[in-house]
Image (cartoon, rainbow, N blue to C red):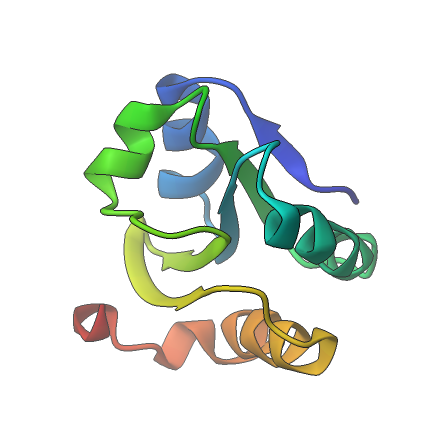
Length: 115
């Protein structure tokens, strides 16, 4: 499995909001150095089976605005079509892995209202 590149609001709805399983969305930009440093970490997790999508905020600025992404990189967990958590900034690989693993393991217990 690899990181799913989201190219439209319709694709975001299908891949993220309508997903039957939790999804981590990486909001990023090509010009963002920390985003480029984070990318190999999330690709490794996706190869391990985590469901991860990528949104380029320059190409889909409406989505970035809708989800109030003010700083990047920004990882947002979605479960049941709702945001349940987020992390902003470049995180160490272990913290990224824990954030993603917590989503995959504890998603059915996640409080949707925490966001």
